[in-house]
Image 1: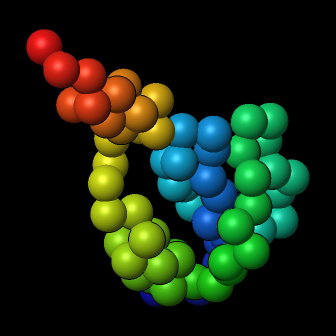
Image 2 (image 1 turned 30 degrees about the vertical axis):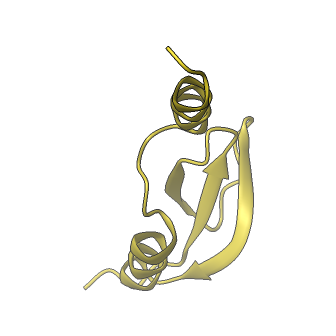
Length: 69
């Protein structure tokens, strides 16, 4: 079983990714502060990433819904 430590990253579109803890965070991503085994981090992502649509799409859809046709 792989017990290497990974961390959870998030980008400006509120999309999540797992990243090896020993590597620097790539440009465009932010460390959420959550780290652990792959399974622990996947459980966290499953809890918090409940809407897989990118933030920009969610905003456009919300604006579209608020604007009468």
